[in-house]
Length: 246
Length: 186
Image 1 (cartoon, chains in turn orange, cyan):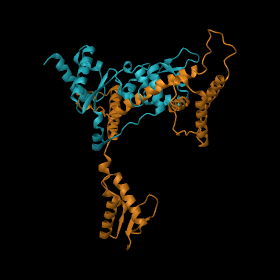
Image 2 (cartoon, rainbow over the protein chains, first blue to last red; image 1 turned 90 degrees about the horizontal axis):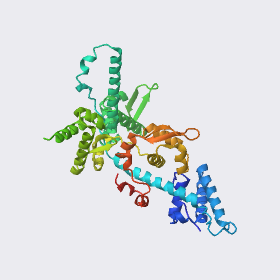
Image 3 (spheres, helix red, strand yellow; image 1 turned 60 degrees about the horizontal axis):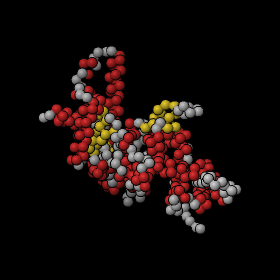
Image 4 (spheres, rainbow over the protein chains, first blue to last red; image 1 turned 30 degrees about the vertical axis):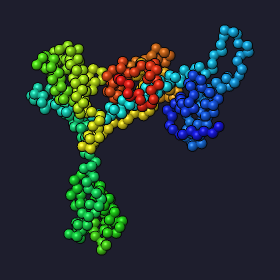
């Protein structure tokens, strides 16, 4: 029988086993052990052939499967007594799979909840100290504990400000206003007015770091196409830009 | 205005100014009222927000309430500014969390025997994220650490309290197709 295992990342041996059982549309209560064992081993081989490390846990379950398979092949212990029904060698495995499946399902539920919650936004608490009248005079009392508390408050205030700044950074839309083409045009304009300019001069016209980076890339691009010559005498020194005839 | 309407109105303003999760106890101190009364008011307020179907909701987790935006407006907010979205947890982290949520307090060994894989790294990561914590030591050999979920866990998944997690033994829950799980009411 031929089959192909789609290489997915499985969370563990049970994850792979559950996948194989579901794909074969088998009942968990009646697993066709020899078929599943074969597929399970093939999957592991396939991982190995792709140089993916197969952790020992996967091999432990492989051994368990083979053991169950061999037990199932053996005829029931010689003449089982009438009342005693021999225990199904698959029983323990089935219980483990059922247990695992429960939590796999619960994990999916959590994933769905997480998705919803991540779509919601919250406001971090703003700095309310300004509105707190009690503190206005306390600061003047030079009690070291009090002083420390005020300093801590100050640090906390700064931390919150930073948090707000990082969480609500400017949208990429506004940031991408300046393109490399615009910058190249701008540099060309500078060079028609003056023979030489420094990169520092270009930088002073840039609003933020993003724009500086764009200007730098624009400069490199113009250098590549031979429209400007660029010189830098020392490391981290000023960059001189000079137009060519092109 | 009845006493209750007054409290609800004040609570709404407080939630707005506070921003952070406001817990029932703190709010009750403000009114010098019974925490139970305040909790009821907050729940009513929460229901009213939901009914209104507006852009602001009240989210509850544990004993805390917090204002948040409605999830369907996410794309508009992202077009306005670019708030940093927290990263989603990995599949293995979710599985470990699910086991801890249902079986807590639980040891690493118990988690590993259910999943069939080692999980010390995952546990460490979850502790660092503040989603789980050590809740003590088991009496078993070696006195292994017991883990439980935190309030932040409830907040991360928008769960009001642990008892509202669906019953794992429930046939409907087990047979729900993947992804359908979230439809189940929490």
